[in-house]
Amino acid sequence: MTLTGEKADILRMLADQRKNFLITVQGITDEQARERTTVSDLTLGGLLSHVVGNERSWMKVIADMDDTAEFDMAAAAEEYVLSADQTVAGLVEEYARVAEATEAAVAEMDLDLQVPLPTAPWAPEREWQSARFTLLHILREVSQHAGHADIIREALDGGNTTRQMAIDAGMTF
Image (cartoon, rainbow, N blue to C red):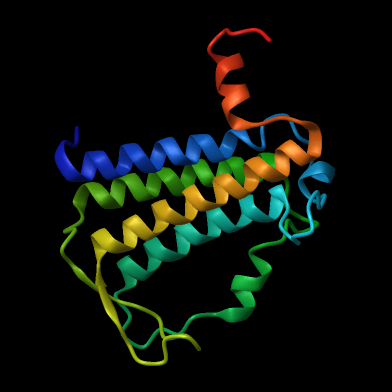
């Protein structure tokens, strides 16, 4: 099925932002992915783990429609770490599977569907939002963290997304 309109636009922008994020982890080792390069605790591997887990988790929120769900603070904290049993290559493969599942779900999704959000310490009362808004939240997360990852990568070895896109397009420096 070929999507058009709003669903196609959302998925196209999400794919574009995933691609930008993934440029930041091209060619790095698992050790580099765990390296802190700024005063922040964020690492490329931790961010990669987070964007994969974040998209998977929010798509599960839409699919489950669980009006008793609670936000798992411990799992969220662990998501920002590239664990000893994770690799960049493995997470990149997992991200491709998550993206494929998201695209399949969106193709069948009612974007106006009202989704119950998990309660959290900052939102103790149950709130609802459209599936569309939830997808836009995923998009915002990937975009924001792609920016973080670009700064971390530049501090790691001077690489950055814009330069890599130019190289990939055949430009030389």
